[in-house]
Figure (cartoon, helix red, strand yellow):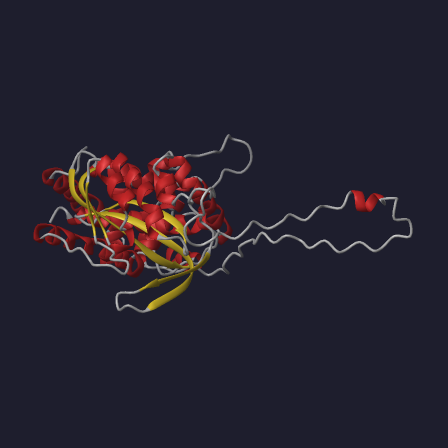
Length: 394
């Protein structure tokens, strides 16, 4: 049913409040956090996207829907590790029932949880559930502003080394006694490549032809499909540096999460990249992903996204770009008074990033690899999305 209307939102709220929660309170009181877990799992409905691969041969696997519910609950409860989640499930019977684990059976081992998490990361479970959740509740609504921003994600892994293309030096051949004859080793020796000539500065001479200027990533993206753009985005762990709100440079090892947030606080689309990638390279792919899910009027971005190509791309989608001007050693162009008021809506992106990190596990990355890091973040984004949708009832 369409739960974006207030009457239907209250209908779902009444079903949970007066039917499901009283049944769970029979075994003992429920904490506010556990009640929040119940509401979020009811909104997310992740069990509808977890299938079973068992064909009746061998030992049946643990139900993946129970494990997926447990990982969402882990983000809501702020548990840092899988061991902590298993300990909480062992002593908390109410949480065990909420996630779906039977009380008469032993909990799965830590290895089973890890294998299931790896399956969820490879199958992009969090991305598929989040897309369906956004389309179901906001797909038919008109969104005023979508705020786009990137945030640092610290990871517990070493930065990947960039392979530098260094030509191997070939040792000089020793003088042979027979200079006219060529030894077989010399015939098969590789010829070192000559390095390309350095680019000359200044204007070209008369009659001199120079190679065309290198195409910018945003110009190249405008002629590509969404799949091609996503393939070119780097996802390896490396080191990133950016200026914080106070103007100081901050460096970290890990990744960068790019998030599109509606003006109601609901995350619309998410994309993970290397920490060193500039925010503007994720703008066009994110805008295309968000355009497939919702309809919005304004694209709000800070000065890091200031470019002519991005403004033209936003207008081609039927959106009005509100991008803070980057003077780049020139004169800054200020917003018009009406645009300045609309630009203040960009603070919703900062609040979403802060809530994801402080409340839903964005600061506690205990896994390695871009796929698993994205899966961990998507469980938190799912919880954040459901929590913001529940706030719409107010």
